[in-house]
Image (cartoon, rainbow, N blue to C red; front, top):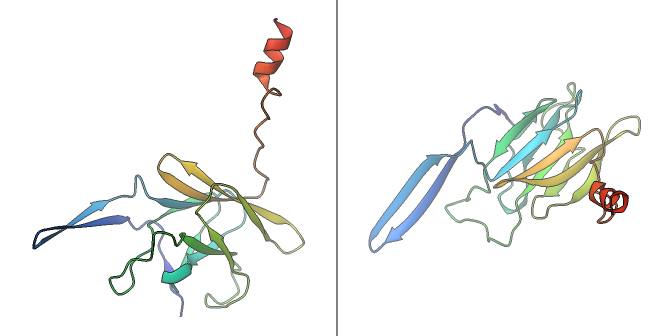
Length: 168
């Protein structure tokens, strides 16, 4: 059965370094600069997420509307870390309060390898939730929102181009 985890738990980052015959393990709290986060910018829709890929997890996290959760990278299974070429992926779906937590339907996989727009999540009634990967400092964020992201103006079409034409 999939268990729900409290999103307020702190993140701990571990570093393992071998020097000769000695192994050093450093643990530090990394909630302020996590490697990944999931931002739910929806006003009325909760999300469920779990880790996908070579180290898939059955642990399901609930992300309430207008909140976010910090995520650590893939945890090693059996002490063996996944290859660096394997992107960190999350399975995300819209939370249905009356559906059992371990129901299988509706999951969509989102890799956090590239900063780009991703396929939308479908809501009942044909509405969409827009999904994109963004970079915030050292944190890569999976952003889910009810409105499409704002497009950056192309070069030559912004305020600077208008000022250049107006005052030259």
